[in-house]
Figure 1 (cartoon, rainbow, N blue to C red):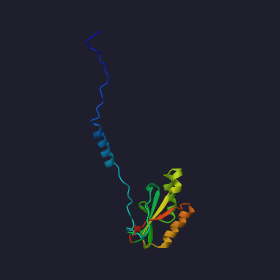
Figure 2 (figure 1 turned 120 degrees about the vertical axis):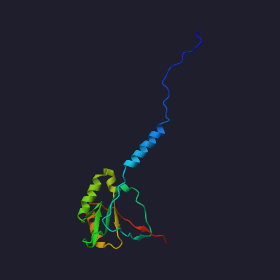
Figure 3 (figure 1 turned 180 degrees about the vertical axis):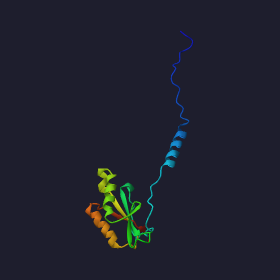
Figure 4 (figure 1 turned 90 degrees about the vertical axis):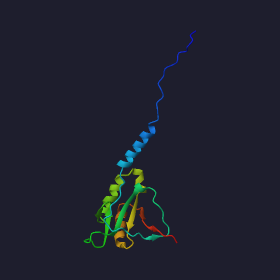
Length: 151
């Protein structure tokens, strides 16, 4: 018998002391490099109508926003429509909705909502024309942006 037992030599344990540093470095990188997409309004900021009952939209990625209001450009008279970052006509709404549908999965398309952010002084005829265009392409789920009123 020997006096000393042979110890098995294995791999030393991996140090995890630098792991939090790596995680925070990655977090910082993604926070700095990611930009949030916001639409630059080409219309005057719409004054939304008041509403008694409001509900938040849950799935923001399934919402296509149509802005209706007065143009900042004095040459445009009456109501103008803004889709994403450009002024458009009623006939352009069809292509806008089709382009947004292509970005979605097949099973998400029935849940797609068209959100109207219209000035409360906008003409009903403009919104009715857009709704007629939406009806023709089966985009029947419509929501209106409003300011909650606390009575």
